[in-house]
Image (spheres, one colour):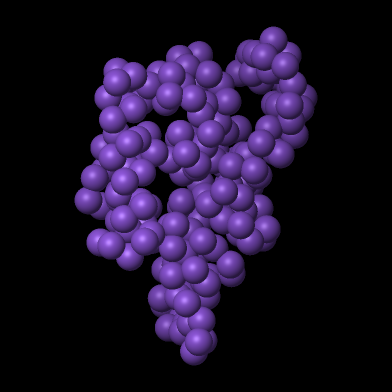
Length: 181
């Protein structure tokens, strides 16, 4: 990954319309985006699909990045959303095809959807449904590896509120993954 100054220069040049800078920026972001997507989708092909979607989104929306918060934080949000979207799409395809988990396999941890962390994704979907305010902070901190301060900047939320949301989300996820909900 390039250093902060080099990254800022690439972003500025790419935003100004320099295609070569955009290409270099995307090439340097690719491993980071792939790692982020792999946290949601450990099956390589799934993570790769999500990473490609994220990189496309980064390239088409780069002009929207206004320098508020860190650039890598902004990239993390896009990569996380792309991974979650890829998962939802795969899940719909699996449901449409009436796929069945083979007998003797734990459906909470083994996915018919090409190796995704079904238990994590289902718990995350439940968190989003029941407590939408908690989900974004949790995803950015625990799956996106951003600091609490970065999460507060990205979500435009006071630091104390971010910490409380993440604590509540972790408790929900622990309970849900443990089968207690």
